[in-house]
Image (cartoon, rainbow, N blue to C red; front, side, top):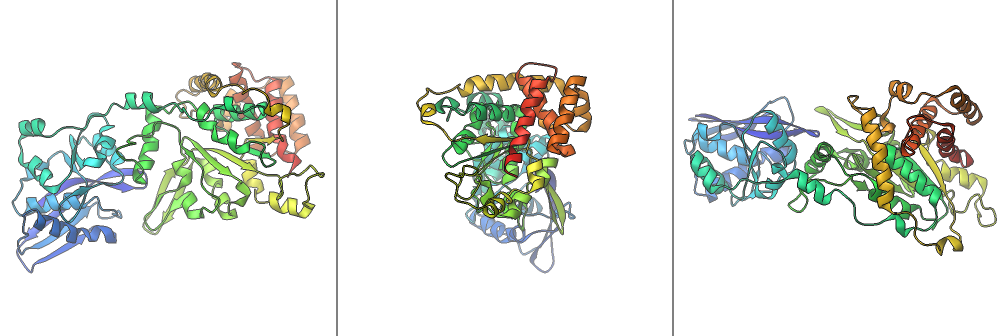
Length: 513
């Protein structure tokens, strides 16, 4: 007998509906699985066979053929166990085909029939919603994660027997005996959207650096902090989440999909409500940075999507790892090619990098710096010209004086966040309908439209362009940063003072490189 069950499958960050087809017929007994399957999917036949036996269902001596379609896409993971078991029970007459109509079934099976946690439930349920699926049966541990999606009945199941009981029940019994998982995404965002940890009020002095960081956060610009050890670079960078506005629900779902695929959502955190802050160790590999592996998974640059990627002591990262950033810094995505397909992961992050100016950390103070010129050049060359050119703001973090340390704390993160939110509101209104959110995302056409300069300002920029020998990319970045500075001032017009500040952020690197 032929049967089929709908399930979810992943292709990069996106999900698609797959169909588990089973044919159980007379002939030489066997269990064959086809459909471009990885090893862990093929192993499902043993898990399914034993799980059915331990739940009182003996498989008749039939020739069983399982196909997971579409057969031209690679299948991986263990989420196919449960749908295969249910399709097999339908094929041998234990369940009816009508019981699984408009039902999506996903889950890994233990040998005792337990339904275990499965990665990628959120994108699967989102796709089920688009395809008109009414009910999703998912592992109990994933139920609230799936329930974030509206207009789909998500039911968490803990065992194979519970799934069979659900499918045997009629509509009234299902509604009465099986509790639908319920989550209010709006309440989740309200409760967990604002960062309440470290605060800029705890840092005395460094007002110029704080202003640069505020500008970077308002326009989502990449920023490099360079200065002596102990000047406060890491302290300043780690407080950036405290001034970032909360994610919108749409952005939260997009980020949560990445974390769901990576298996990083659980019952304690069913939705990413705050902008991510990723700070990898400098020993990270190129593959862990960009993503990939035999079964491609998102890397750190994708986990930082819509948030901050902080590289402390950036010069100690491998050259290959740093160069991985070239494409995502420009294109806001990472593409991973394999023989069986190309996977694209979003990577729209704000890069925050911190470094010392030389191996000892005190250059250019020759009273304290013992490094020779070649050592300094070699140290600084870890940041290549193309990467440096993609960084919008470069600011020097000067050594703190005793009098600065004795000052009371500076402006609070809350006050800075309010200005940033007003600036971002201006950006949202400006870019409405254009598919971009921040000034940093502007392309050449948007720059021409929204960064118009009067004759006085244009002449000022031309002088800076010639004096600093800027590239076309650097010129555009100056205009985008100036646009953000003007937004923080509440000005629709970019003035000379805004351009001067933006140019200053681009000229600090000339002191070292």
